[in-house]
Length: 68
Image (tube, rainbow, N blue to C red; front, side):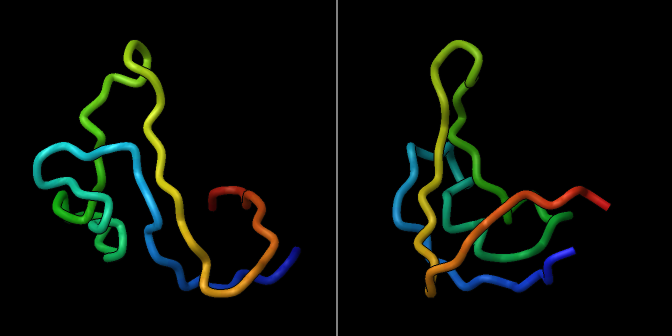
């Protein structure tokens, strides 16, 4: 299995956000804190997709990894 490396990134763009759930909130790893989430406030099934664009500090190859 390939090694896992923490990547440094900045938020380069996003579709929109709702209320206090700005895209910058994902920069803080607090999974149990509602304030560390991003939400577009859209119902993606009817209004289209929401997106985030991340700019990586260094070039890399990304892939999915299975959840534990």
